[in-house]
Length: 323
Image (cartoon, rainbow, N blue to C red; front, side, top):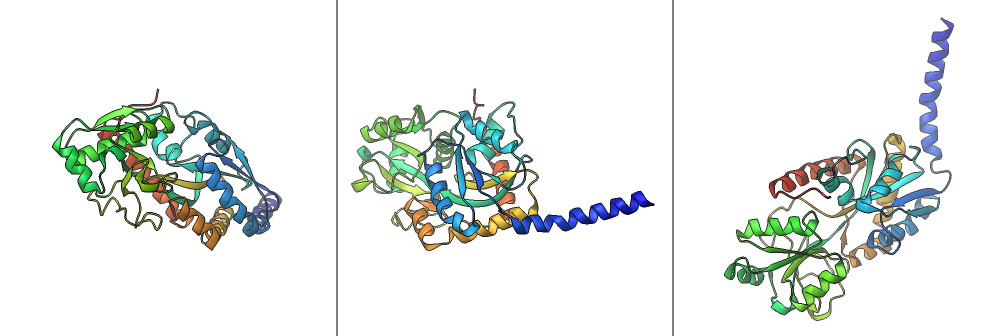
């Protein structure tokens, strides 16, 4: 009888202590794992958000860059961190929706090893035409491609990358072949686009807002719910007749599995408050990032749904595994 009473008392103590821990959170600096090197776009955006989030949360963010092949190093660091809310992790589409379908023997479980907290923003991507084509709209580009089937080149970073998946999607929508030309890096690809070696590509557009007179290429359509104030003359996929493309490029805040619900919800609220601050919102617009704030549950459902839809598309287009 005494043992039962002791167990009941201990259980009540634990239950009572959990809200107290959440109320005291955060009591020390928070480590934030970023999967890219310093000065990469994800790093820059995270640090800008961190500068404002620190005042809201009352503790410093310590950014820890963990670059590595296919972002696995960062995911593993996050997965093995203590689930107390003092290690948070910034992941993108690549880590949690592409990798599970492309990498054999992935060391982490994209669904079970991490807890989604909030979408930090959608990195607006889009279809860009070479300046050598001198097209002003996606309709003009489409007309050129259809007039010469199989002769237009599309720059990618390899067969298992986002640009190549989008190439397949556009070719299907337009019912015409478009040739893939892979490059090792962004500098090579942009140089090829400018020279006319390739006629088009898909890219995240954060570095394309500074593009005087379409000198790097003409952005003909973009992936967003609505047009960007930065490039208001460019139509969305839906407006351009490309339908509902199911794969998007986002940055999200995550935590290791096991972090208490109360902490997840608190971080979600405080980051939501940060993202709507006028200076942060203006910065994100300037980087061609679209804010889509949601609850932790909504973001969890979104990531799961996109992971499923990504798998279907990769299978449909026979996208190869990463070697």
